[in-house]
Image 1 (cartoon, rainbow, N blue to C red):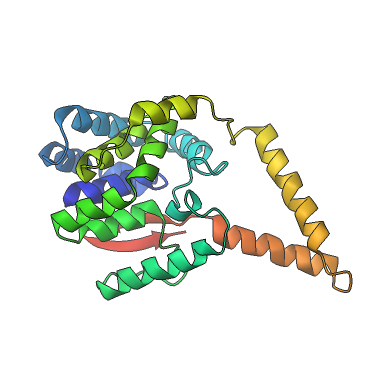
Image 2 (image 1 turned 135 degrees about the vertical axis):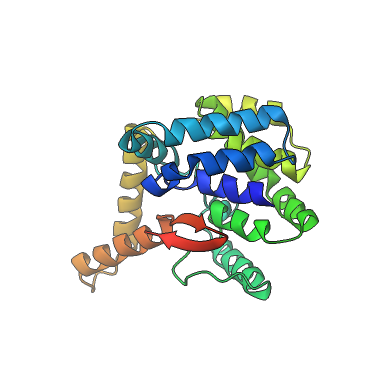
Amino acid sequence: MNILKVISRLMVYPTAELQAVADDLKVEINKAREIPPASRTALNQLVDSVCLRDLMDVQEEYSFLFERGSSLSLLLFEHVHGESRDRGQAMVDLMALYQDNGFDIAIKELPDFIPMYLEYLAQRPDLEAREGLADVAHILGLLSARLEERESLYAGLFSALLIISGAEVDLDDLKKKVSTEKRDDTVEAMDEVWEEEQVTFMANQDPGSSCSSQMSAQIKAREEQATPVHWVTDAGSAKAQG
């Protein structure tokens, strides 16, 4: 299902390479009959916004949306398991699913990165791809509602995925809930998270260990876990862009 590949490409961090294939993306969008005309129009508008404007401005907007706070995280299991131990097992199960179906990724990749998941589904039969989207429809709906609340064109990606999935999601109810949420991408909210992490870290610190070495390990582990990889596809193959 080529439209899933297009959506995957538009969902990753914008690059000059992405901007260079704007026309190709539009061709695939306009051919897609899995989504209605209104959705095709919305995706074309996103292509124009991402590919026809200054790259640095586009990258800054993307980072502000998806890389601040966790409410718009593109990691599926962050919305389901948070930082619980269940998330690790879910990662293992998803990786096994990829491997069982011949979808190979680099060992450093996070398997629940949504664009990667879409790349996997794009290679599966249409019915299986729709079922795979339906399995995470509640997450797609939540992200769609939050992006609409922020008046972002990226909302069109998730709306299109919901349509393809065929799942019934009460978007009106989600939008009401989202409208009352406390934003987690403000400077104040991010400062609160940092302070809470530091308090927890100091409380759990082993008095007999080196403070500096423990803090370095803590920061490194958090960065390696939380930083999503920008997933890009070219001519049907997948590669990671750091």
